[in-house]
Image (cartoon, rainbow, N blue to C red):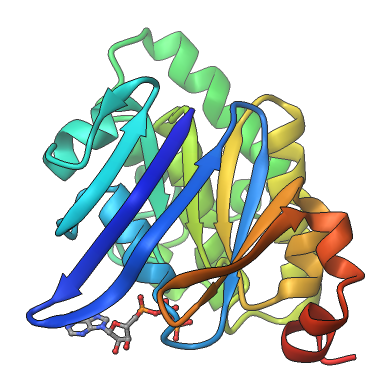
Length: 235
Ligand code: ATP
C-alpha cells in the first residue's frame, strides 16, 4: 500500500533521513521505533507532504506521492495524527469530530454512523461531546485527535507518538483502540517511543537509527532481539 524507496530528507544542508526504504502492506500495523531525533517525525511529515524529500520515492496505492501537496495526499487517503494533539480548542468534541469529516463526499447518514462508531470506541468522547476540546485532559484530547482522523476515513493512518505524555491507563486504552481499528480493516504506520507496547500490537517493525534503518523484522522477533531489548525496551 505504501512503499518508500531510498528516501533522503534534508533540513537545509543537514541530511536527517538517509536512504530509507520501507513498506506498509494493506491490513498491517507497522511500527517505527527510534531514539529522540532519529527522524521518525520527519519521515511521517515527508509521507504526508508537509516536508519535501530531497531524493528517493514514496508510492501510495501504486501512485508516486512525493511531489504531491499535503492537501492532495489527504485526498488520496492518508490520515496523519501528529505528535501533540492538534484539536480545535474552542470547538466542542462533537464539532471537532464533524470537522474530521468535512472533505467526505458521502451522505450525512454515513457520517453519522461513523460518529456513533467513534462514540462506541471511545465512550469518554460521547460523555463529553459538548465539552470544549481545549478543556479536555491530554489523554482525552489524544483520543479526540484519533477520533477526528477516523472521521476522515483514510485508507492509511500515520500515528506520531500517540502515547506521549499520557497516563498509563489511557495509553493502554489508546493501544487497544489502534489494535481494534486494525481489526476493523485500517492499515497503520505507528511511530512510538513506547517500543514494548507498539511491538506487541504490530505485525512488523523498523528501527530508525540517526536517519537510517538499523533493523527490521517481525515485531515478535524484535521483541526478543537482545539489542532491541537492551536499547529500546530497557530489559
Ligand atoms: P523525537 O522522538 O525526539 O520526536 P524524531 O525521531 O521524531 O525525534 P525528528 O523530529 O524527525 O526526530 O528530527 C530528526 C532530526 O531533524 C533532529 O536532529 C532534529 O533536530 C532535526 N529537525 C527536525 N525538524 C527540524 C527543522 N524544522 N529544522 C531543522 N532541523 C530539524
